[in-house]
Picture (cartoon, helix red, strand yellow):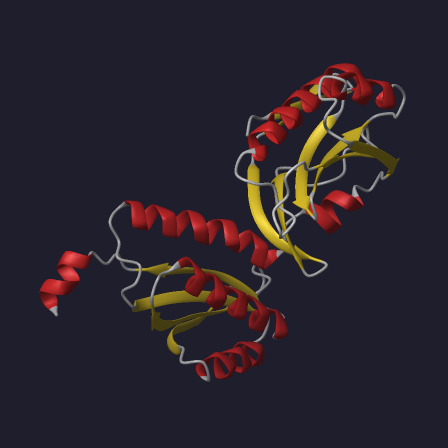
Length: 269
């Protein structure tokens, strides 16, 4: 995904941190691609604009088939560049679900928006689309709806880490100790979390206290459990640990695992 830029009163805004993740919406799968390097609303872009494309060949789950994503990506890229030139639109992301792909933009004004979209989409007469827009100065659609939640952020990181290890020759099916970290605001919360995860086979590795004056969640914990490093298994574990850390008003802080090569594992055993 190329970076996208807009101009805020003469200053170029360059977005480069593109994140892709999955979410369940109305009991159906959805995929979201988003530029996540926006930390606060941009006052010069108070309007939200959405172009909703109807997929021509959606799957039974409402996602695009194996061919159509390329066509949708072309429209996505061309429309983003066209709206940047014509109405100074800042493209922030997209969502695919229920047989539709929604493209999200923030713009300074809605003046000229409809005609600009019509002009570009005239090149794709076989595609049905809808245009909607509303005032959103606080960027609630971006921060409250599109931005990934904690566990959704881990989906991307887990996938990248596991893909990298598999590419280097790791035998993901082999169980090994996987260490995890979490932080809490109180000692009692940390203890409650530990007792809860122990019921699922986790064991304590280490616990510590950081500077309470400078760290919001100073009560840290490292714990582990032996299991395969397959994506489904790791994602299930991380979702569980994120939820339990939230229950005790803490933060799950990641995992680490040793590299296991099939030949070495076979030789030792």
